[in-house]
Picture 1 (cartoon, rainbow, N blue to C red):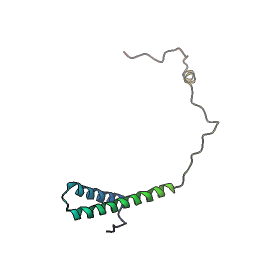
Picture 2 (cartoon, rainbow, N blue to C red):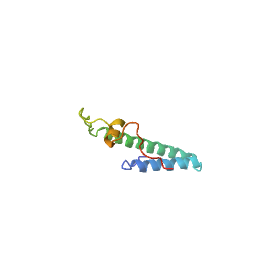
Picture 3 (cartoon, rainbow, N blue to C red):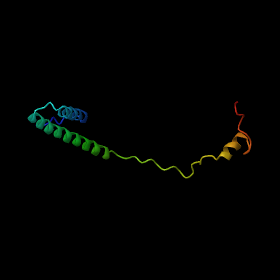
Picture 4 (tube, rainbow, N blue to C red):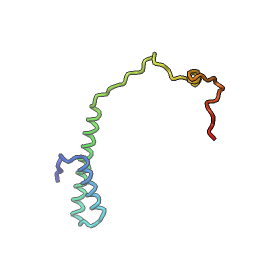
Length: 99
């Protein structure tokens, strides 16, 4: 049996799932079960090919590297700097606790 190669990954996976469910039910004759296993293998191989194609497409995408920040960029402020901006000293309370 030859599968339709135009099936999407999702369609092939759904067919594989349906094939596995029919095997698990145990209602197939021996010949039907052998044919279902063969179909299942083909669906599995198709899924693997589709995944490999997707992996190759992803790996072929151009990579844009972000530039590193300049060394002159400002550093984060320290707590003391923030307090000085607000006009408070290091030991002064920040506000009342609401009770």
